[in-house]
Length: 198
Image 1 (spheres, one colour):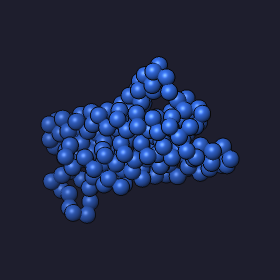
Image 2: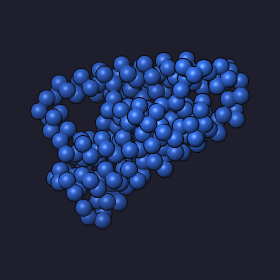
Image 3: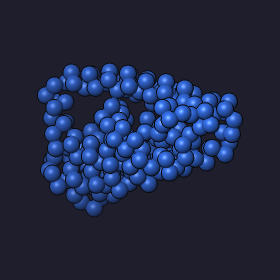
């Protein structure tokens, strides 16, 4: 990979990782509801899970989509259904003082890893990154693309968690927190617009 291509890849990884999307909306909501420390497993699951996803897309999953175009439609339907479910969970999350041991828990590491596979923005980012920055599909180039995302993604998504945590100072009442959670749920659903229009 040339120096110019590597720089372009880093810029793409930064821009696509820091802009709003399902991961960032959920991380901000988690930061507001649970704080930075309790959201760490969620953050690590996003960063590591997405890096692994990019690698797997590069070494073979793109060929699966090419061979079976209907698999993209199935993935789209599953993604939309799951995102609607998550939006419902966010909008109905109980304020911290009303939470019990069985409700309103932050995402675990493994839940965040698995979420990447039904996240429409993650699929778009991975497919674009491999198509544009590793057109030869050589394992070395795919590995570089995945590692760049791994290095860039964690600091950028941390910004959203920190922003959510700072919002906790404003979200001091049940009404404000509920309004925030409903807003995050609506934004999460709004992030589906490109998928539904594709």
